[in-house]
Length: 270
Image (cartoon, rainbow, N blue to C red; front, side, top):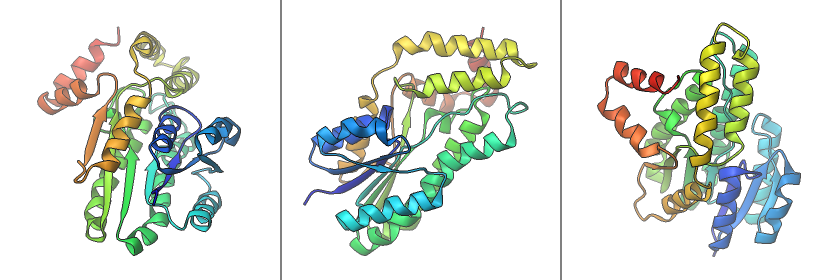
């Protein structure tokens, strides 16, 4: 019997690519997002679109209840919904900072809370949390985004140890750069928040770096394939890494001191 998968943030980028790839490989896929009109095309792959706002608990509960009602359970949860709020720590409002964490952290954990009881009952489940290279390395102007991804890393590690006894696996995916709306949203946020402040010069350099990098980014299916690999592994790894510069950056993070890593990062912002 086909496993039922819920992929959040399925209207674009990694989420959309993952929903399509899994549907093409025999999974019963629900794609969830706020922008349901952007998921109409997923129906052609046999994917069921469902409305989900990960910052609204009623919306989260309604999404899970619909899938339970229609499919009986959720065997695999891919917590992909997220975005990057960029700007200097000094400049980002607390309201925006809290929203970043609501979307990237609390939404994912609330969904996990709601799918775990049936996973325990079935003695089977997979929770895949989409982190980032930015869950291990912090770059200037991404402070609140990185805080959210560092949190996902820690929460995933804790949850993995808690639920392994019930036959449930928790995996982390750490993408580097991929083609998606993410970069444009992050740059727009950066320039809106810090483009006219004391951080303007550095913000402009970061904007230039994002622009130069854009042409080298792989398609999001590269990360979708990693997610599929993690789901189908008999003994899954705790972390899967892929995308532009992901493995080299994490390697350098492991061997360089904090000061050396920071000098390397700042050398790219000229």
